[in-house]
Picture (cartoon, rainbow, N blue to C red):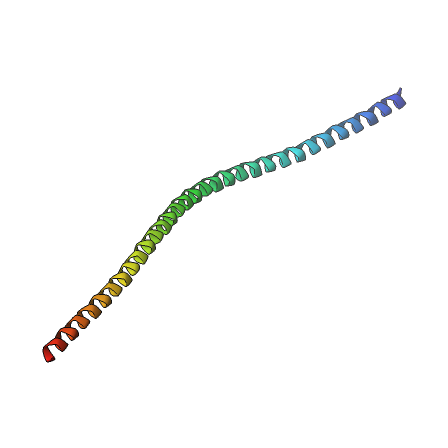
Amino acid sequence: MTQQGAALQTYNNELVKCIEELCSKREELNRQILQEEEEKTKLQNDIRILTEKLSRVNESLARKLAARNDFDRTIAETEAAYMKILESSQTLLNVLKREAGSLSKGTLSHSAHKDS
């Protein structure tokens, strides 16, 4: 019976050792789980912060794009109006030169009649 008792004691010791190893592995796994949960929480917070930042950048970008479009439209309208002013100035100058030429001819021909 002593031999059976010794065998039982050996099995018991091995069983306790296996249970302790399982508990140790569980604790290590639990430590890793806690570490990853902390990492997950940190990442979720980072994502929230980055999402808010992205939203602010998108809003700012939309405002700036609208402002740029306003600038583009104003510049195009101003350039078109300026071109009309240049065309009108050229036309006015041409008319003025023609009139001045006509007046000069009229004055010269009128002077010529007086001299004769």
